[in-house]
Image (cartoon, rainbow, N blue to C red; front, side):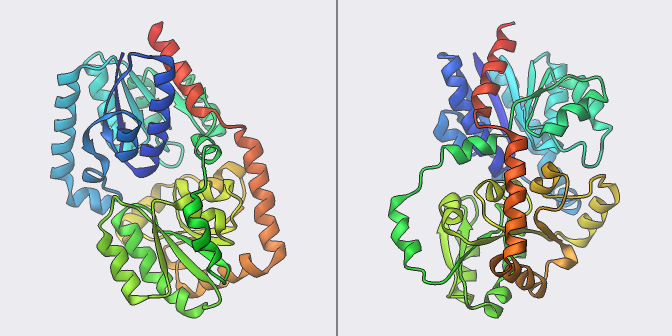
Length: 370
């Protein structure tokens, strides 16, 4: 069968790559084309366009780049029609992918959605559009199944793909000596994979490093962004270490972490690293988001647990003084540290075991055969 996948960010690229590997086990004649990333390409997909060419986050960023976004939507639709897949598989990335779901429905192309847009967080009414345009939805958070039931829409809960990524992680032995040579406790800095996330993190974390010189700081860098961002930061703060594409290795050796809000926070929790979640956007985008947000927490560990497992430092709370204070707490206060670790244990129990990619692929192939 012919599969067309769309993933618009780094975490989607990772989870889609694992899904491709699993689909290959079910369908030996599988042919994959995608709008995605390097991990999907390595897994066997022919990449039509890379996600970092089309990814814009935040209200103001979308408005500024609306012409480019519309041009990308048009081009992607044309590419789908040119290759006419048996199924379009959408991975998260709700703003773009919901438009593609509507288009696929109009063109009578079967559509699966893997990793639901977070419609439960703000625009719950969009669940009706998902029901209207998406043939099958595969969700990765336990509460999402009950959420969609409110709209008389039956979805498949398949577990969380982060479990698969963690369980398949093999430590890079070439880096072990590097980490051991760092005599101070290691603090992992996970600044995200978007330009504004990284630059916002760097604008705060440099001062944190100056205020707390008893720790070694390692930035988890990504190849999808210009190296100049990291080089400039390293020149300004030579005590920092930059390591590319080795996030799990860094976390495996860290005693604490500062993490930009997103999938990385759940990964950090499942690797048992005490951390805080930080985020800062431009004020216009932030105020719009806060005006429509319908959830108490923004980080996945807190959403899954249902209470504050990790501290969330958002917008005006994301300052060097507050980050420094919480960093010292999770490194030196055993009560706070153990409370987080206990929370992680509960989260793991809620999510269940690994095998999400295989389970999803089996269901997808079965539905397609039907």
